[in-house]
Length: 454
Image 1: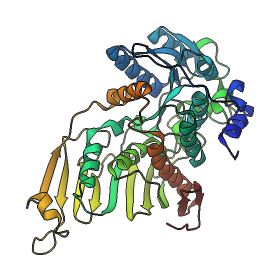
Image 2 (image 1 turned 180 degrees about the vertical axis):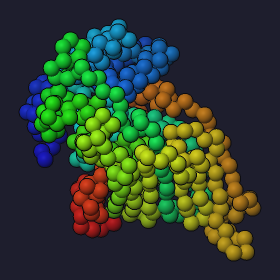
Image 3 (image 1 turned 135 degrees about the vertical axis):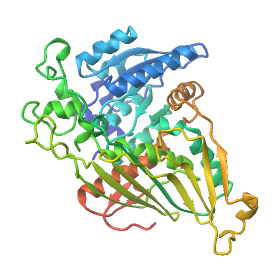
Image 4 (image 1 turned 90 degrees about the vertical axis):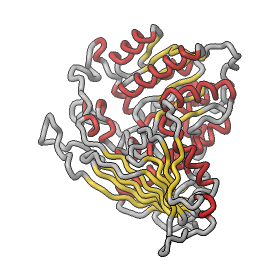
């Protein structure tokens, strides 16, 4: 890998991943200084299902605040470009570099497949843009490091788009733990389960679309692949790869990066401080979805449909997660302490609202508190319920980003908190694919299969 961010951008440029204007080692652009009454111009890069939804939320929040608008859209699929242009009455392009080259674009939404997240976000920050970066934050551990370094170097605002983290329960949980309500942390647990056709990532395919498509059916396949393995559209199931990219390792980490990010990021907010894992192991498999619905002779996916991981932390606690796309029953999302347990989402749906968090004391035989100091905090009760505000998470998350663009304060899901989550889930993917227990050295950001000092 290139040894620094500038070399990374230059190498990516040689592969056709970033614009020539950003490939050279030059000082980072500072971006437009926003006045109190200036409207924020937002460019959307990736206007598929998720990107179009996020753009709509930005438009609604921006109109409500009167301070932001969608000013340009981009996608490699002409039909999606046309849809965005029509919806927001703005310019559109097939080439994201045109968005970054516009001096009046203040921020970009990056809602592409995962393998494009870091290259575009890095180039955007170099061009003086703030970035709303859809989860997962990136595709590799090294990309997570480079994003963290670049935010510090360019002083840009980067919010990772896991809107779940704007829910009130995680912040209430953090306060309760900080107040000593559970004693030393032992283990956190969570899940993300679903069982539906769309939940399997078998999204509809536009059969007329492709690199040979005419008019609005045209897809810039070479640009979409970027620095991923080169594939032939016809021979290598290009349509399935494009429309159902989360099923393939080249562009996604499957369950870990799509679903577990919504669990691990909130956990890092709950804990006293965000943390890198020390040791990671994972398992699972393709247990149910082994054939394509349209062609049973071909495999349905590369990534597992059922996946679980264990992350161990040097401060003395573990995180245990389970997930399946073939069964919809969750387990409660909670954090276990030696003195009490804290349940954030009893129903287990991390993206769902829970009206309260629950603290339940651990008691030994005879009914005595395991940690005697907690008896006073619980006022003799076995259980405490703390109310949770019903924040609409998506508009709250978007609004927080727009506010931070003016204040230059750290957003809710900042790059360093997100990097702690990203390292865990990326290591879990590596562990699954290599069949190994993996270790992380946070001083060097290196992953290995040999134990490192905790």
